[in-house]
Image 1 (tube, rainbow, N blue to C red):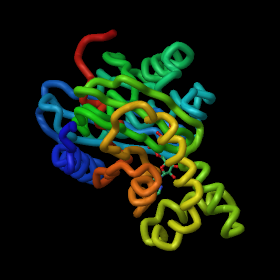
Image 2 (tube, protein in one colour):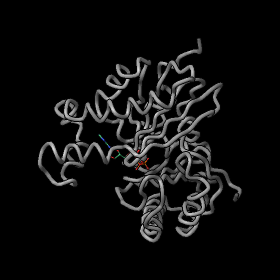
Image 3 (cartoon, rainbow, N blue to C red):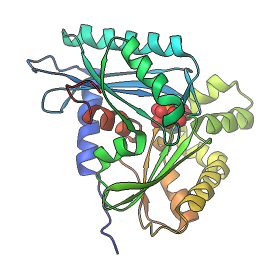
Image 4 (cartoon, rainbow, N blue to C red):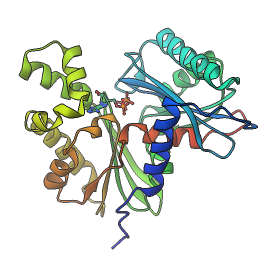
Amino acid sequence: MSKINKTFEYCDQLVRDFEKAIEHPIVGESSVYYTGVDLGTACVVLAVLDENYRPVAGAYRYADVVRDGMVVDYIGAVHIVRELKQELEKKLGVELLFAAAAIPPGTDALDSGAVKNVVQAAGFELTNLLDEPTAANAVLKIENGAVVDIGGGTTGISILKDGKVVYVEDEPTGGTHFSLVVSGAYKIPFSEAEQYKRNAKNHKELLPVLKPVVEKISSIINVHIKGYNVNEISLVGGTCCLDGIEEIIEKKTGIFTHKPQNPMFVTPLGIALSCRQESI
Ligand code: ATP
């Protein structure tokens, strides 16, 4: 049986440092800055690390420029990345030159060009383009098991064996569906439901309402991990911020399931960790 990684010590510390750096950017003398650009269905996140790969700044914005993992509003995406870049440059007092980006599993042939163009058009030199599960695992550091990334539009399931991604798939169910369920159940507009869902104070009340959609995701996970010897599921992505989601998934899959403290920033930080100084 493979060793189960019961804690996310490195990940939790990195995310805590990043959350602090979002609030209070660290202005210093770093010789180089590395930026991770995560272009998501619901959210665009920029994470900036210093020469020692420590978080120094970050910014994010909810946006509708990507759908099901594909860039659908190219100009909108460029504007947001450029604005976030400029905002962070102002705070840090430096120009951010290098960036890495990621693409959801299965979209590389179609969309890697668009993601690359967005990052370059926003004024970065693109130095790495990797897949999201590999980025997430740079932070989680899992040897064997499944990483389930429940974002806004999709759920990415990846299986790791000896630290390498051996299987990846992306399914079109995510946090947007959670908000639609909340909107229907509470008879409130989608945007209000989205805000309500993101407030941790409402999670206890929302969990029974959202249980069926979490169970649907659990069945999707079961289909994809069948045939693989998975004995640990690690949850990442903003939707996994929902309190208690891990318990439902664990019950439905019968597999030990856990998540880091803030699953939303794992992939953006992993992308930033993969950033280098040479263009690809
Ligand atoms: P995708 O991976 O599908 O392209 P994305 O990268 O934009 O999407 P994330 O940034 O990982 O996805 O997560 C965004 C989703 O997480 C949204 O649906 C948002 O409502 C949800 N989310 C963010 N914070 C919370 C929270 N505190 N509680 C519940 N859901 C949350």
